[in-house]
Image (cartoon, rainbow, N blue to C red; front, side, top):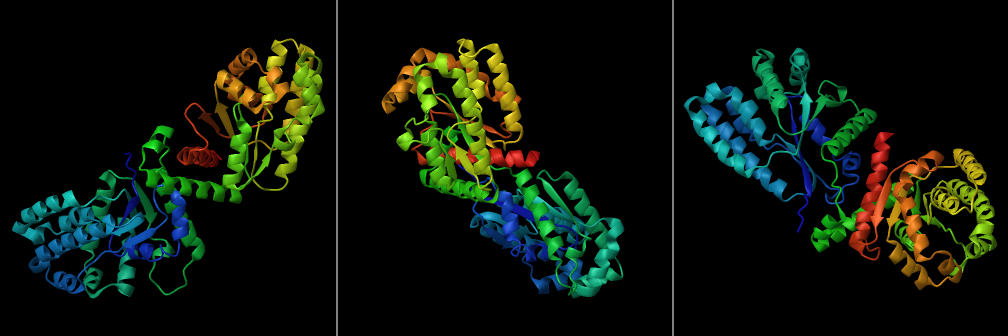
Length: 485
């Protein structure tokens, strides 16, 4: 079974009074913003767990007053607290914000405490090494940074809101300087990704002024974007989807569909399906329309997809005579249909890509001599002009199916004009034109976005896990296009 993570742990660190607690405090208020980091990820629940630093206040005060006497007890108590935190991490899913991870105890506070620990330091070091085997490191760090030349910011915060044990730093700030220096050293060498925040901004102040919600929203949005960058969602192959535990896979399918439906509700997008005659474009378009709750534009608008276009009917029975007239009539029909649907400002799907007329049928009819050079040139010019004022499709779903299987589909649905018009050898000839289809359509400017290939020798539209793969491919394609701007 393919194992997938169910959480992202985020360690929060920085100098004393940098603002770590403030960041954790307001995280719940902006959890929906943080969940943006999970867009495109279907395996990590949209849950937020905040595990704050646990500290014995009395012990901290005793240690602050008598550091040599209580150094070992204080540092080992910190390790015990990190073990307790790990139990919470183990039982959490989603985004897990972790205050004061174990590495900070060792590489910053214990490092500064070496002299006070004295002969006990090797024992502490051994204890740390053993506990480190049990405690997982954060996937990502958030470093609330205060540089040494910004020390007055920390002193001001300690003067206003510092604990009694911290007040001594006002007279002798040397420990604060060392604390800043050790943080800088640690985050210069840490192996995990680091999100660095400016700890001097007003958001991290602990005064009683109202929270600047605009600044807070920007800050948590920045964090979400960087989490998503550092922990990009899995882009699983179809085989990998099938290798996931069944129940987990079904949960992933539901989440993928929910995210994609939400995205299509919030952003108007045009999805279009391409593929040879008999590939099953209409059936898949109907599935997508139903599952994603978007409207559909059908190539054939008769009942049960019967052919009601008289010119199309004539063409299927006599391609040579009606090739030019049909293609010239279809172009404005398809382009205008896209324009009209786009004016509703809602996402929709086309059960056939309009540009297949240009890239596949025109080229094939020209090969056969059913379109002259002059007619092809005229139609191309008209198409390029028409698409200049029409909305482009955002996702192109290209169905891959062999000519033999397509011919079987044509025979099974039993439309006599199609059975006559699309024999096996004709489907084979047209198949070669699909090899450069995505490249060829660029000349018309009808599509601007990702192309998703669906191999119907492997993909079963009736299989819900396979559907999850399709939702993933569409959503990830749209998100990637969004990043490109």
